[in-house]
Image (tube, rainbow, N blue to C red; front, top):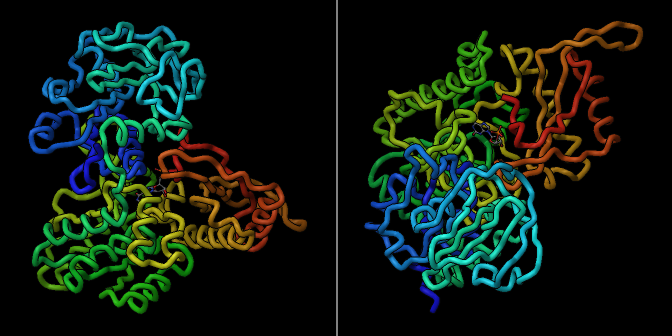
Length: 520
Ligand code: XMP
């Protein structure tokens, strides 16, 4: 029988995969709340809560040798349904009497699996004898199943691509159902959460909003909160959510870093002060940011300097307001997962996003980050449930460090001015072509490389401008947008003709991975 949505949720044990949060997201898409807990806190989590089922993530560890992270034995005795994914499948198999070995041929990317048996996980999705596409990413593989299990799917390099012990409701898959490259993956996860774990599937973003509002009230109490607005979707949604929770206890601060796009500062003032009536302080700090960044070349150093400058100014503004206890930020899950492992599990650092890894130790304000577990498109849905206009929730993301991470090498005010113009032309053309909504993020980059050109009868020796436009679901993976040559030709022509300092335009066709979206 289906449980009520009030207390049903799936516990996700994080063994350090880069995509653990995609599992959380797929579960939520099935209408079930989910919570990610690091494997190091799994024992405690089970004592303190009553989940409807458990999913074990993948991870970089190997169950062979060393001291791999394990699932506490209480889980297997709890009677809860368990789904192990990749490392999760391997650790479950090893714990329950099966064995794992290092595969001679590793599988990365798309693979075909063959369905060997019907199984509750596949109900209504896959049938015996069929072949289906899945996403694999593994070196180790299960070679002997634990007693009680049977194989339900095989692939070329994983004889136990999916295994099941339906009596105990234990399931293991070597592939990754949480990534979009496993086309039926979300339906398998829904089978697990709704059919196998018995959840009703009635959780929604409105439920998240109500819970977040009460959590903010509980965290903040009578305290005062200061919120940094960047002009982007995330900080706008965070501010509106916090305003709903605590009203005038919130003051928003907008810092013009001198690293913003054309018209951005005015737009923020208009929307927040006039549109929402939210208390807003504006601060012009371009000289301070550009001064501190002068001569700095290393991307990580730039991010740290910007993070520190932001916090310094917030602290000053906070002092000006009197007693302030909390700093609110629109930090999202992708910002967190690539800086540290958000839930304490073992995962690798790619970049320190300014609002996470760049925070100075001495910061005196406590953080309120109500969007920390959400992906960008979930934040957009939340924004709509809060009544924000489409023009605001549909905006492309813009990074906290702004144009500083779009000028590789040393930043100079004149370079920022040049880049700002190129960026404006690119976005204007995208809007005019009706492509803005199709593209997840688009921007220009100014390269510290000069090349020779010819304009009229004159030789030119100026900088290169890179254009980047991607489609993405959540910023974790992305593909370059396939513009027509004609469109790129128009943009290139305008940039080179209208802007002094750029004589060549290139289009970045790299996907993420292996590239990141930003160049730094
Ligand atoms: P990357 O470059 O990591 O970018 O593939 C993924 C998404 O995150 C944005 N981004 C940032 N956002 N602070 C932010 O608020 C940052 O430091 C930061 N760095 C990257 C990026 O624009 C893209 O949308």
